[in-house]
Length: 432
Image 1 (tube, rainbow, N blue to C red):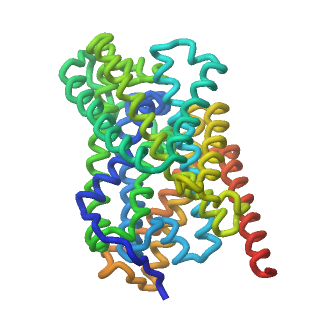
Image 2 (image 1 turned 45 degrees about the vertical axis):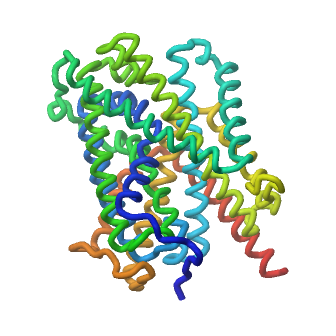
Image 3 (image 1 turned 180 degrees about the horizontal axis):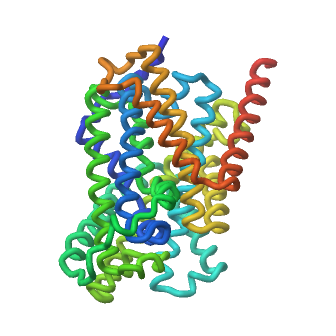
């Protein structure tokens, strides 16, 4: 029997879900990634965005199919658990936590880099660690005191995040004096896969928009339409940003690893333009970290509640009614990861974790279709629907083939620890 959510109002429509997907996907990474991708593949970077968007399109089709069949709160976790069982579902939950941790640490690291452009001492390890500690302590305290303050801050950040990107594209294209990038002539196919595995970071996040699936109105219609609207808008925005940045800086873009858009803004609008983009980028990254620190600790809370982790992780603050221990632990772990690694390294680890999660979700979409699960009304159907999950799995495997053994070993280690925790907890429940 398919479980259901009770007491939740289905108030999220196409526009609301599309806006949510756009907001959680366009994070702080786009302020840094143009330089990383330019270094990986050169002037052909816009093609990497298109290829990445096409790959994500197949994955989004799987999400749309699964989301139209399973309208439960939990999103990808619910899809995988219902289709593939509790163990694989728990691994999906562990990957979701890992993505949240590494992505937050990556953007936290990038946040320090964006400030260091204006305050050079932050490139030194000790000042960098102190500021990171302050940031995570601040958000830990903010989230322990309640979610209302955090959500209000996020609403403001959404506008601040999008405005400078649109301004950058419009003004940058008008004022750029450099030649148009040789996008096709410089393409090196051998480098394409590695650049795509980096770029997944910019497109990942759409899975978090589907977590409140139990509150989506007419999910069979709303989920696919909202996801396609969001993905189209995101792709156009990203390609435009990369192309304009390359027009402005040319080969120099690959060298501006800390704050490429700030450097491009300085080139066309002087110190005022650089300050505008730099401040907005810092606020956007600050807001992204705030949002992730609001959601990621709930995974630790759920693991404690379900007996996977010690019960202390499920302890709720008596005054503020928040999972205080889980929040504090998440802040501490994210700080350690951020202070010991840089943006590019963390982004790739996050990408591998999210790709494995996507792999589970695509297989789950096929299984839900095979079982003909229809918990969200008439399922979303597309021509060649049964083939789409197989194509998505093939694309994910191709992208993952560009990862290194070291990168895979980190993900494998996390899944091994998660498996051990799952079976130990299950053993305790069977003997109690």
